Image 1 (spheres, one colour):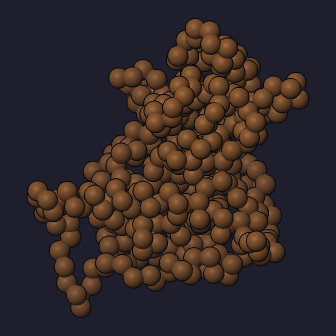
Image 2 (cartoon, rainbow, N blue to C red):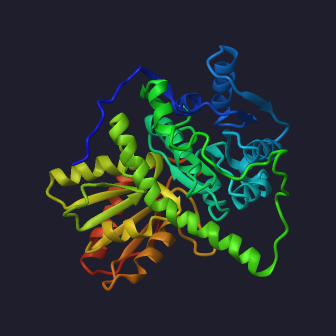
Image 3 (tube, rainbow, N blue to C red):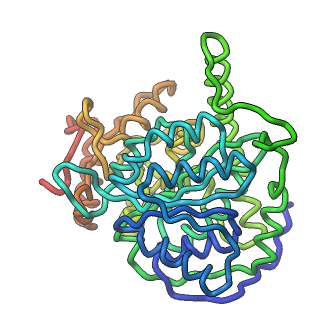
Length: 401
């Protein structure tokens, strides 16, 4: 039986998601923070700058001329062995994509927050997941948060994951712009020394570094089989990250008393015959509808998808095996398939199951639109139709119906 430490809480504050993220960074003590203001994560950068001005954080600050330069600076610092952080969103994330690939390919354990925002065009300074799903195959690990508390905790766990010698991959900590970045919630802040102890296994861990004593060239030019070996080892590290994410979450729970399920979080799925999958702040509306339907005797459940890279295929199969209908709510569009990205990923994950479970996709919340509980109710109505073996429409745009 696992033992759990008695959780220690230094203080409880009410703060928004950006500030919660900044507190996570403060507790992890990075050597370099690079920032470029962009809505809706600008207050994150401002909060970190204020921590430095107040003497709470000893770190190098770089105010870059753009997101590409910011990530370039972070890449250099990380390659030299430093702990690094930056944040971005939307068009900024698109602008830095060239360096995004370099960071992943060079296996640099950078942590970058993404306060997700709609991408152009049309222009929309509103919430969406289109920005981070658009770079999902760039080689980074991507973890999506539901609350301000989860944002702070995930930043801490992200450093433990990224800097693990068996992983050494950059991590995106993603959270909904506006819905989470600007909404205030109760957040428990742990003691600095407890976070130090949690990160101690990776703090100063051995990894390749640029240094005068042992000069090397990076990035290198690789061709043929050598290039293939780089990609293979990168892919293997992504695969190893799955179990590591679950393991770190369990250790975090023992240390701080909070758990988010690791790769996914299941809610009332044990005896459910219909399960809805969602991620980010939208899971709150789904959880509320699940509770209401349970009170009426309906066997429904929720799976909160926390990671999309690596995709938690094995955990998804385990959670959904034997269910009679599955729905996937996406705050994004997978052009070409005209569905949501997670819908396609979930359906692919279920391919190896002997039984064919009907899966319906629901696009909702893009362009900053709300996902109301009424929309979730309608989505469950579609699943009920599919469960009964009746014809059903595969993809629904809930905000247009």
